Length: 466
Image (cartoon, rainbow, N blue to C red; front, side, top):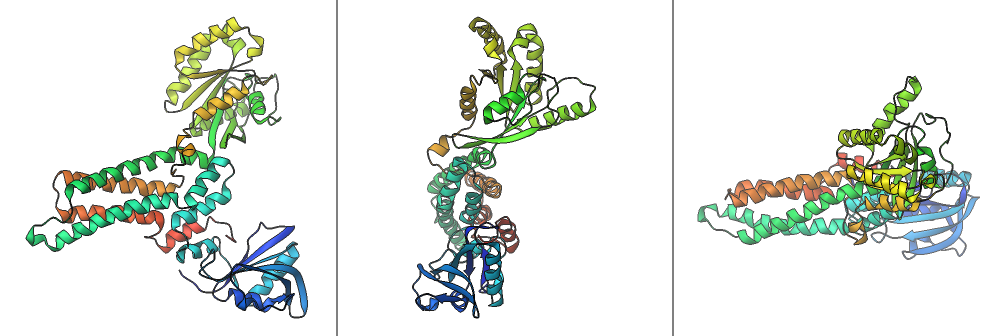
């Protein structure tokens, strides 16, 4: 896949702006840049030092297209590992297109999605997991996802995997050496040390695999379904959380007939709140479709807020308990938080009585008034408590990529096979096969083992220009 031709793309977002950056990379990038650049001090770009800036004009023959700043980066000391120049021009879409079309005529071709980062990977500037972290960094929209992407881009995850792979590779070499001297019946690999290594690798792999549960929701946002009977204040609660009038609020039951979704970042963690149609028996066809969607959203949610009207609970507590038990039994693996609304209309004694009844359900509970915004901050803190942010706070490696997660599971399976073989005195040649498969899975994560189809799938998700 290694290509030496020069590629060009707009590195800043498309559309008009104050400035735009056009990036060229390839063996002839600086030569091509020189052919269209007229320095204010008559400098020859080809003779300039790496990591320098130059003021001048982009010219098409005698026609000046724009006054620009050109950055020169000489390979291998560049992002891609190749000769690279970046042209900072004015952000007119007309100017951008004129310069790009000129560069295409001078010998560049348009870059594919993610091709600059692909070249950085192929030229050894970063490994595959670091390259994928670049895409995660670009798409990060909260503090937590940004922190994880930065940690992975700096090589935290790669270094951990590389260290395990190197230690396992050393023992694999000794096992292979034993096979060469099979007739002499000698052991080069210390079985006790090997067992300790396998235990350590197993421990690290399990920790990384477990971290995916946190990493995946942090990366994609934690889906939270707000459910309950009609007219208990679900839309009012969504508006209170978002601090804006996002959903229509009405005293008429069944106002929300479709799901309404919006996002909120709480202490660096993204939550996707879903306001659903009220759950009840209805003959209304449209409302019944909305209720069906409510149960679909509960299925998809990581966390379910069951909102109830405290005033109605006083009158018919049994009905509410039965309804909550139904949801609890139908979705036993879901985290459910009971939120008692409209407490501004109750006294302390009434609230205590409701709390006592709800405690029999063994579910976490919050009392608030969505209308008066009382207890909303307490609800936000409770939502955060459902997210295990300990690894994030301690700057531990957190897995967010499904491809990495899959390879880690497969590597763990192979390591456990090797452990079983070691404990049952399996022959070295059979153990060697499982070790090789584990090494293969480690290599798949960092890109030491790869293929064109895999790279194509990964970098196709990048934006063009990165």
